[in-house]
Length: 397
Ligand code: AMP
Image (cartoon, rainbow, N blue to C red; front, side, top):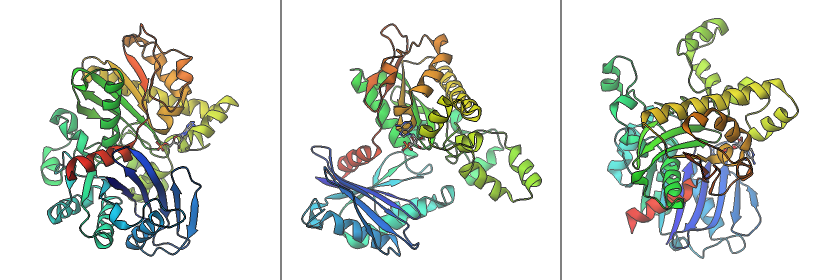
């Protein structure tokens, strides 16, 4: 069957049409600047060139309409008609405590997703708009919600509770949720499969290092801890997000800069992380180049980044009382040998040994540790769209 995978942002919509039998991506694309002047759709059929069309997109319904037009276009399309879309899988950012797994979307599910809006005010409303747009254009086509938070719902209270008055958890559900769950689930599964083992028998640490970054401890197939929290701001340094810091910094900076706490949070989300610290870029390609050229800010930034990744790996090895596999994934994890090497240097106490030659590899599932390493260290490319497609098929077939 053909599954349309949709990832809606507040002003964007990413899509892939995947044949679930061959798991081949038939076409993919991106609608940008929805509801803003200068909107455009970039559509790429498999094996074909990018087709970019500047076209007004006042809302997500129009964007979905354009996606269908492109998919069925005689020149750049890959299917003859809308009837060849058998199901739609949506990436939904926050499922709160309501969703521990993917679900077929109905009115009740819509209401429950809406109830999670205040936990992800920028993302969940956009996800709902995307679902409504698909419902109006493809009535009757089954739709599935796949949550970024669901995989981490197995965390025990000792991992998800913050050290704040319990009533805030009871009243407002303030707790760790974690994100990138689809990726942590997919990558830990793929790692186990690649090693010919059952995930249920392994202690795996997944390092999802992309523009957003998070680490998880996956023990016997279940997430038992992860670095992102109530929101995706907690944890590692990221492209532009600060990750962990002393919460008092928020009011301290608010007073010093004479700006609101909201504005400080915006700085922590958009101007911090490796961008803020290095002053170079949020992109690790630029950072590596600056590092090679001897830029001191890039050097200390990459050192601080690797140090924090290593500290989390140490923490999660303790949380699981051991670790069998460390898997690197996402843009930075799959490509940046410098980071994997720097992190590896901290972990020799665990008995990990990275093979420097293998560590030069990128973008493929491969073991980069030496045969005598006590912990298997791997690169495992993530594929969240394929994971969403598989979940969708599982639920609608
Ligand atoms: P993601 O969020 O997984 O798409 O990751 C995006 C980030 O991965 C980019 O901002 C870069 O920092 C990093 N990245 C992507 N490709 C490379 C590469 N070839 N070398 C180093 N870093 C890369």
